[in-house]
Amino acid sequence: MATNKIEKSKTALPTLKAKYSFFEDVYDVVRQIPKGRVTSYGAIAQYLGTKLSARMVGWAMNGSHTVSPYVPAHRVVNRNGMLSGKAHFDTPTQMQELLEQENIKIVKETIIDFEKIFWDPCNELSF
DNA sequence: GCATTGACGAAGG
DNA sequence: CCCTTCGCCAATG
Picture 1 (cartoon, helix red, strand yellow):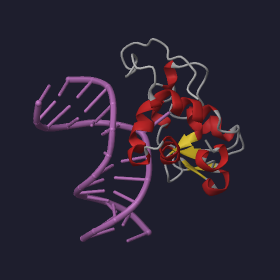
Picture 2 (picture 1 turned 90 degrees about the vertical axis):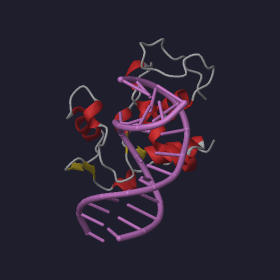
Picture 3 (picture 1 turned 90 degrees about the horizontal axis):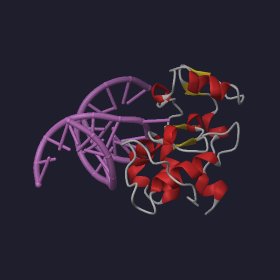
């Protein structure tokens, strides 16, 4: 529902003046990902109605570090189940470790049984 | 205002 | 089956 307020950030956050931005929605959806489950940028994009722009979701996540509450960005991977965003964490290994703490197995930066733990906001969250 | 880039994804070779 | 290209939209130079 995007009721969270965007922190007045530095310069990196876009559309700050707009009352609404899909950035908030992205964060909101990501926060609702159950522990031990993961989703993909494309799934979030599809939920937001911009499935053709999954890149924007990833772009939005770039500001996930500046928002509150915490956004479990480690639960969001690309459609292949690869930890494509690990490089954007504090440490390159943090993303994998966080996932492993949730009983998610990772080999070669790719989630094992990705399809089984995949959480589709369009299907699970429904609106 | 055009060109490049990006935590993606699907399609083509 | 792996690699390349294109499309998408917004931000940045």
